[in-house]
Image (cartoon, rainbow, N blue to C red; front, side, top):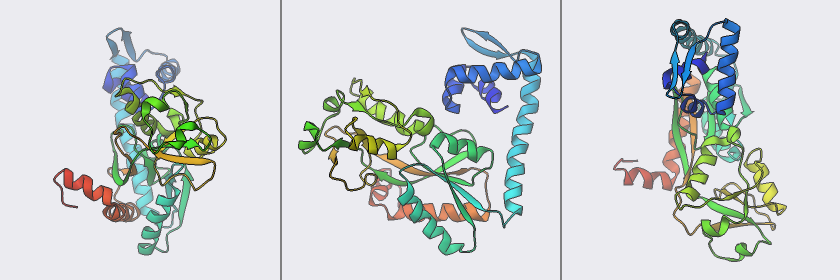
Length: 301
């Protein structure tokens, strides 16, 4: 139902697929599967986009009610079941930040049973929407779906992580043009869509096309692959652990910093979520880079 609603709202399969973080072909197949199950077409397809049929309009009217009701059911169940575990999703590479968040949280709510799920950003958004987790901790997410809010926890510079034997590792800093000839190892789009898009956009801004290596499952695997000489990756300095096989070098090009976010449902008001938000704001207040960003925006930290 969410897939059909997204296509109906956007009127365009490509835009809807981008919002849902799906391949366009996959979304098209999902919509056609719904139509086959119902036995009626929901959309009229043309070069201009996708327009609802009469059956589609009836479906969307009822699906909107059902999806909203599902969200309220999840919220009500979590609010009523105070003994239920507090499930938080964490993307790879964010375990240290998760530890800081949870330490602050458990100081306020020591009796809570907290469970951690290892999920990429896209999976976190799905889990938040259907109520499987109360919050997610991830790198800069892509444009958030309706109903999801975020708090920026940390802002860190992007650096190049190179194998120690790579000639560029001998330089004090490297340029994106120099790096574009080497295999760039990044998580797959389904694991970290926002992170991947932001890093690739840095090359595109300079009319460069990076040489992409094979997609890796998360940044931890990317770092391990760099250590074995399979290419390089772009990451924040807090991520890689000290290792003789790895060299971290600043970028000579100005590249926007990467941010870490706490993701929550916008309408969620459970005690656990409110305490997580309080912990997130406390962490953000400790980060000098966040103070600088607020000051430059004319906001008092």
